[in-house]
Image (cartoon, rainbow, N blue to C red; front, side, top):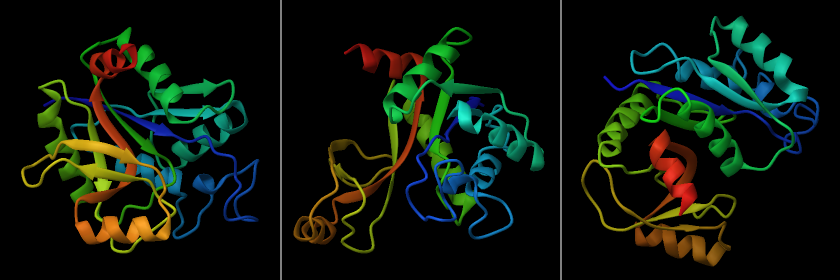
Length: 211
């Protein structure tokens, strides 16, 4: 079985859900719905299964102690904690982690996930990840989408290039749309919300950065 290194993106500016979420303690570290924080629940979801290696957390220096304390509180030993000098969104965090893992194993698989997602069905999520592993053998980069149930304007979208099968080719990314465009995309049935979760081999994502 291919081992997957989970990569949890847990920076954040704390600008949403104030005052529970704030600059010094963004929402992924707060206990919003249950006793565990969203970050802890993400780490738990990406641990324990045979396919998962120790998770890597990517954060900034202000949160490094919160990360270690919250992981210890749920009994998770992190593989590494990578510190960003400043927040630069997803791509630089992915690249830095891929370079870190490449030194150990260029063929390693990495699953990148935000720390602040709520996933109700862990078993279904893990099954989707295992399905995605099949595409990695062909050098594919796998993205995870959520089937929309409303014309949401606050999310990015994925336009699918076809239907059916375990995985579907991606035609393009669509930035957050206006209401009319969101309604059209929902009606078409050919779009998913972009979950911001990615699965790929280290060498394949590094090759993509080189192109």
